[in-house]
Every structure is written in C-alpha cells, then in structure tokens.
Length: 207
Image 1 (cartoon, rainbow, N blue to C red):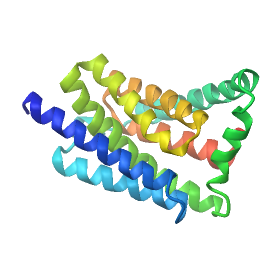
Image 2: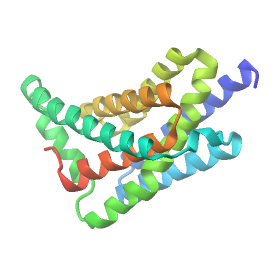
Image 3: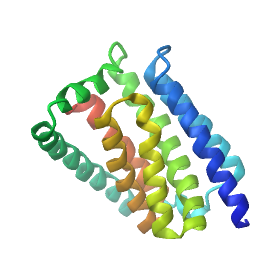
C-alpha cells in the first residue's frame, strides 16, 4: 500500500472513530454500553474488510492467555494507584471518576460484563491495535505509529468532556499499544482488555 493511501485511510478512520465516539459519549440517547459496543463493532468490521489481520496475530497459547491475564492485573493496579494520586492532585478527580460510572447506571452488571468480554473488548482491539496502530506503524514507523495511535485513542474520548476519562484512555491506549508493539498478538490484548474492563466496571470499581 502506498504512503498516500495509508494516510488517507488513517485520516478516514480517525474521523469515523471521532464520529462514533461523539455519538457514544455526547449524544444523550440510548444505552451507553450498547452504543460503545455498536461503535466498536462497526469500526472493527469496516477495518477487517479493508485489511484482514494476519493469522499469526491471532495465535493463542497458554503463554498468551497468562500474559493477557497478568497484563490486566498490572493495568488495574496502575489505575488503582492513579486514582489515589489523581485524588491528591486534582479536586475534581473524584467527581469526574464517579461520573464515568454513572453512564452505566441502571444496566444489569451481568449484561455489562458480557458486552465488555464478548463484544467491546475484542472489537476495540481488532480496530485500534490490529488495524489502526498497524497502519500507523507502516506510515510513521513503529514508535511513531504507536504514539500516534495512543494520541488518537485518547483524543476521541474528549467528547465525554471528562479530563479523567481522557487521561485514562491515554494510559490504557499506551499500555495496550505497547503490548501490540512488542508482541503483535491480538489474543493477549483482547484478554487483557476484557478482564481489565470487567474488573474495573463490574467486579471492583475504582471510585
């Protein structure tokens, strides 16, 4: 794929992701968890038809499963510590973190966990790392593509109007982007994302 086409695709999907995340966070209608699941699935489906991930990126083994679980635990620990320090640094941190959880109020926790594990986490990783970061790395080099994807992943969350959520997205995006940069393995990322998300939003919320 030539450089101009790569750039056009990155620009198109950056715009498309921004539109879907605007719909998810800024449009006050519908269930938040359903909206983010649909947005992720549409983006993943579009990207999959443009460039299917290599079979090597889907290889799964017990080592990959353990790496996924272990990385989820590490990321949860980072967020737990980050919540403590942000509360000390910013007066508004606690209120903004609480407002993130308010988006899911009224939804059955089992349904949230199911959506996160089966739909949102796989779809987000297929799109953001399996397609977007890979395309960005081809265009800007490994490090440049990693940084570009992390930045865009964080910025699309700006529609939430929540500084803490944007910061959290940057941290999580940097974490999973680094794993992709090192291992190029989507099962690790999907397991990590899914377990982290269910733990953070359903099992042991950080408030």
